[in-house]
Length: 449
Image (tube, rainbow, N blue to C red; front, side, top):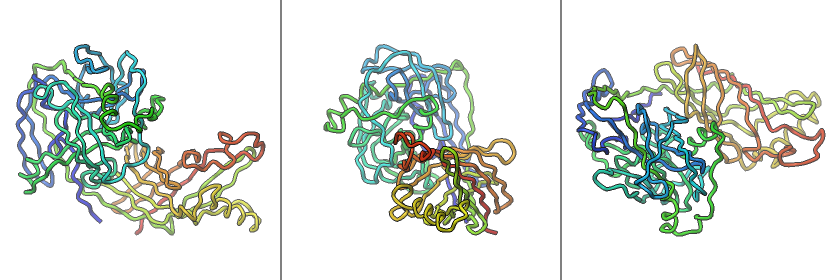
């Protein structure tokens, strides 16, 4: 099965940070289709790019897009508490190039941040509100506010990391926050369709198609810096105008500068038309073994893969999705059939996985980074009992044409998915009845021949 997916890069998607400063000269774009790739040639000369950022921790941490900071040597932040005359020098502390995210830090304290973060996906048709600093040379340095709705829970080519929405964003809006009506962050604005390019190359018109990275991908970066997820301070009870008056003080103008300001350069970027091969998992020959531990003992067993695919692009793992049959969970180490059946029944009831209400779990690979040999670092979303949280793990994936084998060891904290039975973090004085929070899965996947 082949899917043609257009990579979201500089020419189909207008990355919003460029062409906003006085040092930016005109950009000339030419295209040609060659060997299945759309060639994009950009001739440009500039020393600054600008974008938007917003506070994620009162101690000076600011989130923005990676493409806002990429290739820049220095970063200036303006708009702290609405003051655009005072500038702060920021340092780059964390980046996620794959998901177009970055975190900056300045030496000041923002005070109490009023908004929170939405930890689950936003509904399609939900109202959303964008904040940013677009086209500051033309429109001025006052923060701009637009509203719209979530059009889709996926981006171009069904990319699950992005929302499509109708809150208008323009050059300079990149890195700006997208909030819902409760004043909770749902996404980070990063791109919009370049209508002229799409019309010329595909013969279709597009209007007000904008994209934002889902907020949960920012959580991974924040976790690496030990930054807690923000909780709403009560602005969820305010009307939108009152929310705006509080939120705007924590949305900032980001200006990047490059020491190579006098050098003209030519950059050739390719928009790959990736041919992604989706290969099904062999349910019969694939195995998932689980281990759960108590204070002085452990139990182990199996659980079945209901369906699944791994996605490859030119032999490299790029994604995948698996559905786990929670009704198939079974203990294998207790010899007594009676006691083994009792444990199986207990694992399926409300104390643990409540399979009557939640019969399946889903793992979706959102990022796969190849290391040495066949080793990969995998980032995925895991949904259990209707709750989704990001996880990461190492895997060994061997691909041969359309066939593959994959081996991984995955460890999760069950309490994140509300599986809290006899957890020491939720109950006291359990003694030998304490069950450890960590569940370990040994996964072996084989493709259908």
